[in-house]
Image (tube, rainbow, N blue to C red; front, side):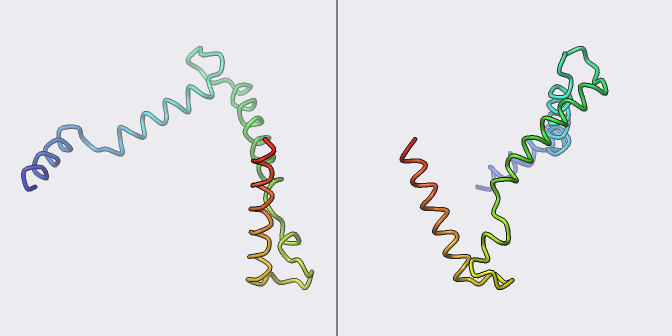
Length: 102
């Protein structure tokens, strides 16, 4: 076991900082996603187009999230544990039905 730890430390030292390499790879991936015409540069138009598409995707996800009024079944301005539990059970049943119909 001790030999494994020593070998692991040596391997880690030889590779350098883990976070640094991962961050560079992520930055390259983000750059490639923004550089839609693959010319090695990101124009303002490319940046804005990708941002608009991302914003639309985010808005679509947000529409599916429950609102306060959906959880506050009795409309008294507070969400009780019972209301939360009932809502969760209802959503779970809806998902099961949707999955079965697909």
